[in-house]
Image (cartoon, rainbow, N blue to C red; front, side, top):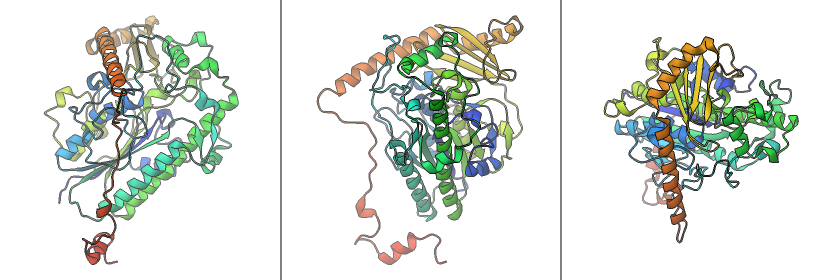
Length: 503
């Protein structure tokens, strides 16, 4: 046996962190998440490493920003030589399991997990590679468009519901299996859902919870297109915005379905946490999202932006020795890996110099943190890499194609006034410029992204010519070892598979 703690990571997709100012907002119907928040350290200003699925998740798992992982977009390979929290924990003796999405691209579909219980929901190949050579061009068959908004509404089953129902089922079954005690190792179970990611479609029982919701209109409605910053204009063009007439009813229905899917997730998380409790297992619990969703603020939808709705995410950690409470200091999801290793007593010294994140344990125990939060983006809707720094009250963004942005989030939480040209903010701007220049060579970064895109285009076209062997993970169950078979002793089997035993 071991005294290392079990770890349960509950990950969701595209959950806007502004809805979690201190756990779930009061008006959200999320009793299980509210109960978890009450016993967690709640990081009210947590940010993704990159506001897109694959790069954000690779950064979360590795504690490294996209320029280090080279997972720039949703079709960039996550290479096998980058240690993730699953590698670190497994090396230290943990049984590591994934149920659900992690959007791994490339032939390695495990990245330290010993076991995967489901396939992924998105493709593992290079077919979604952006092309910086084609400025402003859309790839209709996989780029987001605003059909998710105009098509918002009610359904009892969708592609995503089918997936998340399966993810939750396998997670519950795994917790039952772990409770039987056949494996004496500590465990780390990651359960990763695809909701509340668009399309904005919800089951009726959850949709009805928000009939009279007072938050169905964005707090920061769409300005004229010409008044948006260049990257926001590019995002709307990437979403083919002129092909859709977005009405106020479309917006309200989309937001209503999104909130409803938070409640759907809350039920799923409740099943998992209830199973953990009923099987008398204890675990550190982490709740996190990969990135957020703009939900119509500034006329923008989905992610791909450094604005708060897209880049800020919920992060809550319930662990022995960490007193519940709210922490406002900006942090990042890339801090999760060193935090888990810290809590589990796992030494990261061999790779620490190449890790961008830092443990949140000292901060959670009352310490201070002065390191700014860094975010990167070099994927769909961009034409060159964008970088961002968040520290104190300020958020700074830079791109070789665009004017700098500087927002005072204390005075202007909706990020409506760019203070980069304000003489009163010159000192803050100079500090961020110096920090950004020390961290990033944007011209070199752009060249690296273009080289990666070019390589992947060649490989993808080659591998789709002739016989094709997909990289998508295929979960397998060995039927001869399931339930009852003739090489098993029935009495031993029934006893070993029961929890609790003898009651």
